Length: 294
Ligand SMILES: [Fe+2]
Image 1 (cartoon, rainbow, N blue to C red):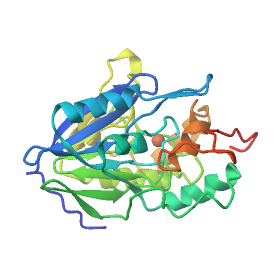
Image 2: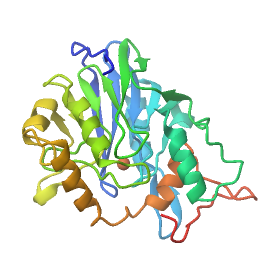
Image 3: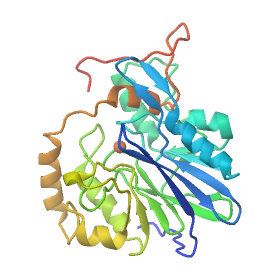
Image 4: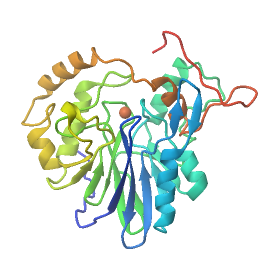
């Protein structure tokens, strides 16, 4: 297993931004010493029925960064989301920073480039992003060293980003009473997801874990922060020493009953381009709907 440079003495400030329409939590992670920061998993608003895109959620994050006088260095995507659109280029245009994602984005671009019948002008080499992370790659946010941990299973390009004592788990794990994300998208694999979750659970017990989503199961209030110790003990899908075999059986049966996320068609087309909206041959912003393609 990769030897990851964990440093629990580094304690970033974490500001959370919940998006109620997609149940996504976006983060601004700040180095208290240098006042530099990173954005994790931003959201661009879409009214899909009307084909209208707006930026209220991203504007809240931009206002936070400006109000606090922060310098934005990184705009991180934990993976190509299938349930919301990224606002990464919109935030970059306002504040700068480099957009980064897992290097396996190329697998996603190849798979969905075919499904959406994208022409040769759609590059499948990750060149829409400023940085492509491999397992264990490090990067700096001010004086803090962050690293990316390769955690496939939900998608082939998922990465967990660890910044000091805070880990941004994307869709590997949900809160203990929420369990785990589905593993049935193209390139997903329940057994591989189990293995990736074990990597997260091998981090120190008091590592803060920040979710990308929460749906408030059983009527509880929305929450997004837990710890490795809590997940190990109580996660309903993997906690209490559940085996790989138990997880794969459960996850496969559950996934077979799930509908496609409402925004998967617009989300993938935008997110596989790093958050840039596709254009038709006349340069107009335009989305496709492949019939019986997913
Ligand atoms: Fe996801």
